[in-house]
Image 1 (cartoon, rainbow, N blue to C red):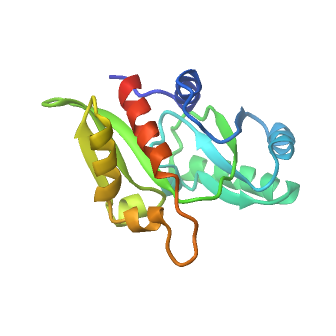
Image 2 (spheres, rainbow, N blue to C red):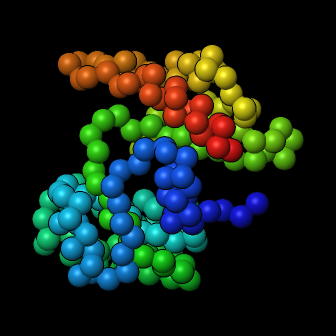
Length: 184
C-alpha cells in the first residue's frame, strides 16, 4: 500500500472536512517568506518528502518562527540538515504552516496484515516517541471506542485541563476519530 505524500494527505483531509492548520507548500526561500507573512506569525516549517517519515530526526522541522529573518534562516537550515542526513531523499518542498496553540495529539492509521485497518490515537509531539502514549482500535470504530481511546492514554489528564490550562474539546476529538475511521 503506497504512502501518501504530504500534499495528497492534505487534499484528503480537506475533502473530508478534517480541520488542519493553514498551510502552503513552497519550493523557494522568497516564496516561503511571502507565505509566512500571509499566514501570519508564528509559523512552522517542515520538510516535504516521501522519503522522510520522521522529520525531526533529520532536522526537518523548525517551530515558532516569528519573523522574516527567522524564516529565511530556518528554510536554509532545514535544507542543509536534510541534505546532510538524508542525501538521497527527494525533496518536494517546504510546508509553511500556521502554529496552533493547544495540546498535541497524534492520530494515525495503518493496514495490519492480520487484522486489517487500524486507527491510533495518543499524545503527540515528542511524547509519542518518548512516552509511547498511544492506543489502537480496529476500524471501523463507534463513538464508544473513540471515547475509550481518548480516556486510555496517560495524556488524558492533560486533555481534561490541568494547572490552569484550558481543557481540550473532547467531543471534537471523538468526532475527529470517527471521521477518520469512516474515511479509511
